[in-house]
Length: 227
Image (cartoon, rainbow, N blue to C red):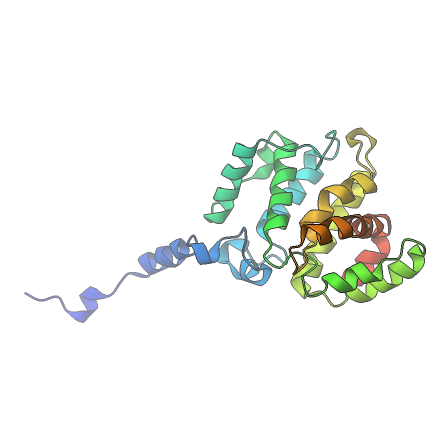
């Protein structure tokens, strides 16, 4: 006896489970995926920033700001990778229960480093570099503001949250991390040139680190632009 078409219908619960499972395939990874794609994931919960960024920042605000060497000291590599896999498989966890703040900080830097086009984008890389003038910081600030306005909305939202965190880190003496130290930690993770020349990277590293430092020091101005 053959089954009727109605009997062949797949239950809605199974369809939902299949859709959920499909988001753990390679094309839907949170790490290494374009920002816009991450924001469209169901398990990103409609947030304006990637869930991994939201969770790491909140966890660090809660109990990480006094950690000495925050963002400078690396967390346990194995634990960082375990947490990465959780998020990539659509199984985010409560990072507020993670005991090691260095692990959380390393996870955040890892995510930022894996953004395919970088947070500041390869398209605007040259404009950012050319906007900075070490002899005239006020002029640099104005030019940087102009370039920031060109960033995609998703990038601006993420940068706004990141600068808010980094500016708070500089206010806590216990962590011994000022804007210059943080800039060295984050510059290479936020900027990427379309040219992979090692010589160019070495030449521009002091510049993009200085740009990050200026953004942290001038956080109020930057946040107004990014809003």
